[in-house]
Image (cartoon, rainbow, N blue to C red):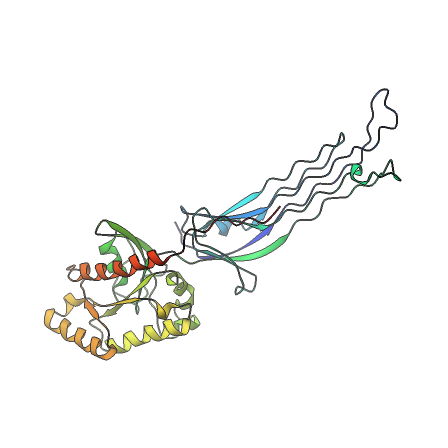
Length: 344
């Protein structure tokens, strides 16, 4: 399935049904009076967060959504039926943005969460509504009220417990393919990964989801490379795994480049817990890999792990460290949000 994380759609709630002008006509009943019913309410546009979607590809082929119009009122004081609500299903992690692509209108993160995004128009009054002591036979009825229209942007931010960051060709996809059943494209050249990948990882009878995003370069926060397009996919992660290529000429500079981009991007990325690891240790050998670890650890004054996705050395220690942060993050999470529905 093709990955798509941004789409523009057009929404329109249903307009209300028209009221009816009618009079009671029965044998032996003179001057029966008005009995025209009111029109029905137009259908709402409802956004629903569902768990079995992980891309916005469906919105590439269907951008226009319109709820049903309310039915017209009828004689014998019969009110028209309300129009059917239209439910638009979006993946968990979808942010609803205004046309300026900056104003956040809604953030859908919980499976089953529903919001009435656009209300349907009210139905018009029938002539029975206007009957009074001075106007016994009104011939007035109102058309239904129009619905609401809005064009919005959908932007998907993957919901993962952990996110992998690093320069291009740092071994992120290889690591994910080894620790999970995900099958991202792996090759020995930069920007092999062009779309985010998700993998489910099992640690000590527990499972968590990890996201691998395309490699970052200097200026990523401004959109250079594949920057801002995919940094949002690790915004919701509870912990970041920062991989640094142990075979690189300047491992300290590589680490600081990514940290600088996370700070400039914002979104709280720089404040998230971080597990740092030197990848591709098998290419250096144990002694040289340890020297690189000490160099980086001394420069940044943080704990640094050494791992090799090929030989699987050091992977278990890294996963255990990630799980500690993920477990704490899950405990700190707020309880599931209730459905948000506007008053009728």
